[in-house]
Image (cartoon, rainbow, N blue to C red; front, side, top):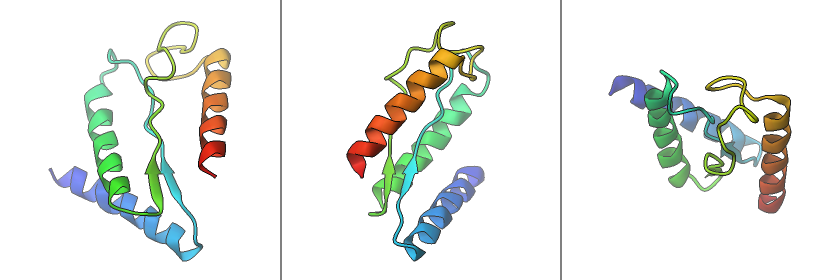
Length: 101
C-alpha cells in the first residue's frame, strides 16, 4: 500500500543520511501487546523496516520482541514500560548494541 512505500522511503532516507557520516542505522521494532489496537499496523511497519535494513549494508534490524515478556511486571499497559520493564529493555538494548559495535 502507499503508506508502506512512503514509510520505506523514510527509512531509506535515514540510512542515506547516516551514510554521509559513515554511520549505521539500527532499526528496533516497538514492543507492544497483541491486544493493542495498533498491533497489526505496527507489525506491518516492522516488516518494512526489516526489508529495508536487509537491503542496506549500513543498517540492521535488531529484533528484541521475543526477549521480554509483555506482562504487568514489564508494562503499564499494552505499549508503555514499567520502571522494571524499562530497565530490562535498556539493558538488553545496551548489551546487543555493544556486541554489534
